[in-house]
Each structure stands twice: as C-alpha cells, then as structure tokens.
Picture 1 (cartoon, one colour):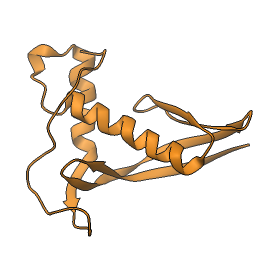
Picture 2: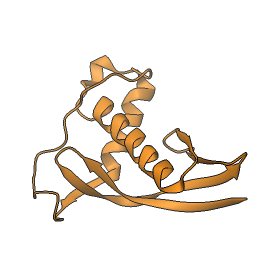
Picture 3: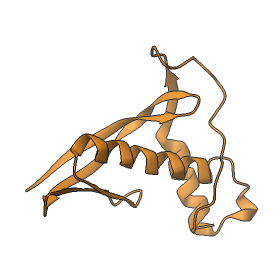
Picture 4: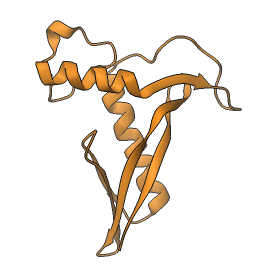
Length: 116
C-alpha cells in the first residue's frame, strides 16, 4: 500500500512556521510499519503509527533547519550551501497559534549534519 501526504508547517522552538510550499511525503505500509520518505530533503523514518511517523519526519526537517539555517557558507560544502538555500526558501513567516508567539527572529542552529 502506498499513498502520499504533504507537510505544510514546521514546528521550531520559537513557534510554528508555515512552509512556502508543501513538502510531498510518500507513505508506504510494509511489515506492520509505515515508511515515510521525501526525496527532495532526504527525509526518511519508519513507525508503527502513522501520526508518530509524521511527527518524526517533522523532527528530521527541524534538525536539518537547525543544522544549516545560520551556518557560515565558508563552513559548508557547495552542496551544503545549495541545501541551506533550499531550506531558507522553504520557510515562511511564523503563524500565530495558541502554543506559539509571533516572532520575527529566525530559528537558531544547534547541531551538525554530515553534508558540512
């Protein structure tokens, strides 16, 4: 069984951001597990629960944002720079929801990624 879904928002520490365009998410069910993936951003996770799997994909996207968002270009490979620019083009303004405050500050980076 295969189907698709779209990611339209990303939750970062500062709040929830609407994406400029939805990220296509392919979903397969095999051996009692959901396999969720997106080739454009190299996202992949498995889960026995679809809701949990979608949350995990969101967490992976968040980690990519934290890894690349404010990294100096001199610290990135050419591919890393292209990928960072692609992530920057994805993020739109923060949306106001009950759990998030309106902020103009972009999210901060916090970890490393192998493409650096």
